[in-house]
Amino acid sequence: MQQLFADTLDVYGVLVGVFVALVGVGTLVGMPWQYTNSGVVTVFQALGAVGAVGIGVGLAWLAHAQA
Image 1: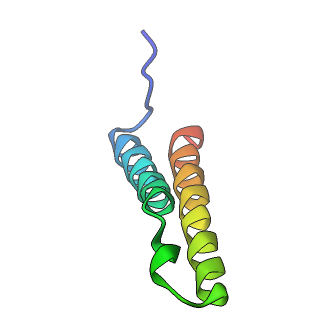
Image 2 (image 1 turned 180 degrees about the vertical axis):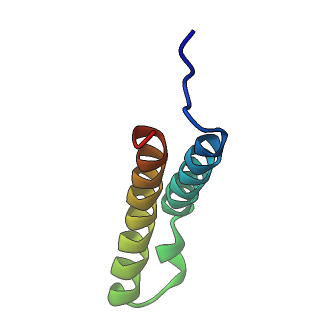
Image 3 (image 1 turned 90 degrees about the vertical axis):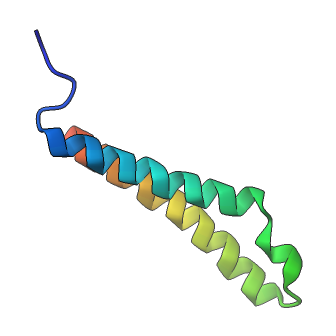
């Protein structure tokens, strides 16, 4: 029988990656830019949220694929 995860710590890496990605999505859904008056701040907030999603997905993939 083949296991889905080679190491028990892989599960934690995937869970942390999913959590970081969900925080990024939650930030985008919460539209934090509506509370700022600066376009530069708005751009950085959106890029940071998209970056968090990318980092979370990358971490989850790295934790699972490198098994």
